[in-house]
Image (cartoon, rainbow, N blue to C red):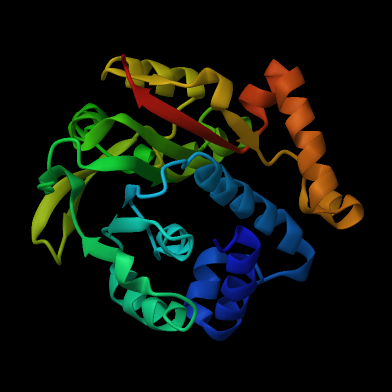
Length: 272
């Protein structure tokens, strides 16, 4: 099976060639921030891959954006359906052409879809992936009920989110949206109005309660916090050393974990 290292070798070449994708991911846009940005993205992808342990898994990648995670999972041999409501959806086809030079992309399918109007079968998926997506889904309780129905009893929801307790991010979001955490938007392609979480990020305690209320439980021993140090630390000490130090710190310090780490990865399973 190919590895994440193989994926990044190909992915970085793609970013060099695709200016639109490069602006979206921004990993190689600045040499001084390269390790800082790659570290964050790589840890999120590694968390997803490390928590998938079924060889013949069917995976739903909700809010897949440009489809990068879906492509990685396809490269690793999984069958994936990626859904999005982003305007650049049509550009994903060009990515499949590019990646088709490296593996058979027929196991990857992309849909422009409102998850609330989806028609997936009961217990269809082994895993549901939500990267920077849950805080946009409203009503969130309705979304989790859908996930509960379409996820197999042994399945998992793998989540990467911004840490809603982060002090700096909270101030930034408040300046941008004020108290308007949920707004109504109109999708021209689907020709319908829908609710949208306006950077409606939450703390881990809030996510745990929300999942609990919808018959899921968050695996508390499988939660990771990522990104604490600035780009200068990565330039000075290298990516591996900084990641190791950050992992030590979030396990030791509740204050740093709750209020200063930027991102969080966690897993939710159906209550048994």
